[in-house]
Structure formats: structure tokens, C-alpha cells
Image 1 (tube, rainbow, N blue to C red):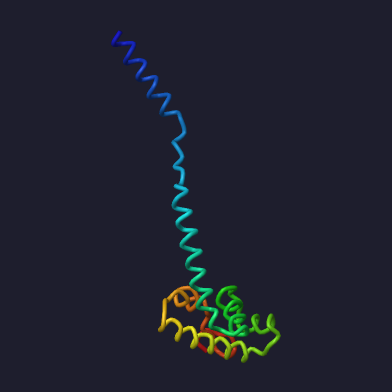
Image 2: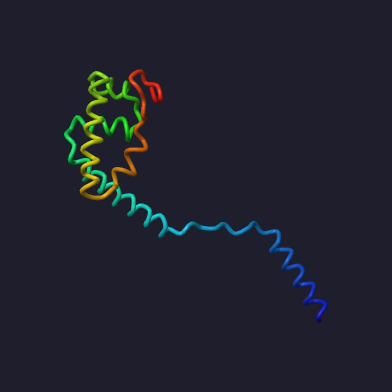
Length: 125
């Protein structure tokens, strides 16, 4: 009888070994929390961007959020590149004032994405 139990245990262990490993299911609560955090962050950013006029908001949206270059944003808006640069500079200054008075949501989401390029589109030129 002990021999049968040992043999059955070995067969059972061998059968378990042949099974594929159990897949770890992600916790849906983590995704919900992340989505809620993203929604709150977007509300904060939109509230801060509301201080900008339409032209400045358009430039920030195209350059910082969509990742267009200054020249591409100028073509998209139908304005000279210098206008894009000046609007972006005014938007940055106005957002800096807003950040100083309130939260830093725009600081974290906008500034790192804005490329620092020179007059001819070269880095640091």
C-alpha cells in the first residue's frame, strides 16, 4: 500500500511538472487606479493651459504634446517660425507664473517635451 501511494505521488508530481506554468493575471485595480490618476493629471494640465490664449495653446499642443518641430508647427498653423517661437516663449512664461501660484502639473508634462533648438532647427544652436 505504501508503494502504491509513493507511485501515485510520483505520477502526480510528474503530471504537475508537465503542466504549463500558471499565468499571472494583472490586477484590474492597478489599471483603474492608473487611469484615474491619468484623468486627474489631465484635468490639472487642461486647467493650467486654460490661462493661455488660443494661439499659445495651439503652439503648446503641436510642439510639446504632438512632438512637432517649430517648422512643422508653423506650417500646420500657417504662421512664420518666429511666431511659433514667440508664442511658445510667452506660453512658457505664463505657465511658469501659473506654476509659481499653484501646482506643477504642467511643469512635469510639458517642459521636458519641448525641444531646445536654435534658429535653424539644430540642438543648442
